[in-house]
Image (spheres, one colour):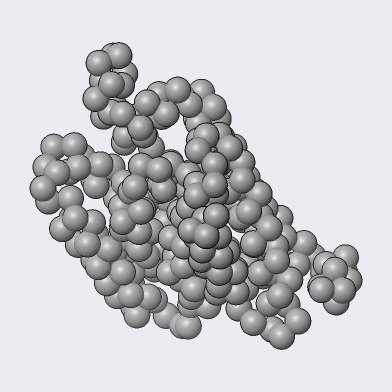
Length: 270
């Protein structure tokens, strides 16, 4: 830990990684809470894995992979949401199909892109140490957008998450806010890709919020605890991975998984 702190003061790439971890924890805590409470983890997983297609296509045509990921994630979220609202019996099938098709399309584009694409591999498996200043600004912008929308529409989201029928009776446009919620989940997925990669993004999105939800029941408190827990796990994983030169993403996820298991055991024995 001492070596990590010393290196943190000397190396800009570690400072960028630390800032990325803290920025990711904000989206992780806020939107992860909605995912856990609304029980749409499988939908979030489908969105997360479908973005590889957009990332691969963006790299092939010379664009920023994160821009392709954001566009693909939003499109997948809207498509899944529309099917859930109008064709709910096929929702699971569609999510599974998008999951597989997105990965397959992405791999095909990767195969046809000249050279070994280290950047795209880092998005797939995560490499927080490669976070650039431009990516930090991108992540900060996404965080600001998430927080602004959640603050403005917090009452509507609360009603939609807990009781859609009651929200509809009160005149809240439930379909619109459900689709908006899925779009925000898609944005969060792209936010977290930089830290742990799209393969592991679902764990970081849900585990801190799930652990927090075992002990508190206020949505605001769950968000706050999940955000702080996500920040603690991300920074701790980064520090633990630095010394033995381990991949930071998997280390963070292992810590998150262990925290959730310990939290669940503690909840059962108390």
